[in-house]
Length: 57
Image: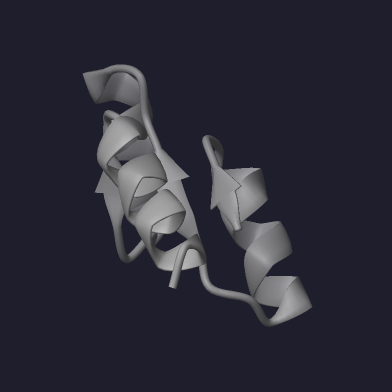
C-alpha cells in the first residue's frame, strides 16, 4: 500500500500489507518515519518505472 499519512500506515498494518510512504515535504516525511514507516520516498517516479518494468515481464 502507498500512503502519505500515519493513519495510512496504520491501515496497512491492520490489513497485513506492506507499506510505502510518500511524503511531498520534510514535515510529512518526519511524520511517517516517526510513526514507524519502514520506507518513505519523496518521488514516486522511480517506483512507477520499477512497477511498469516488472509488469512487462
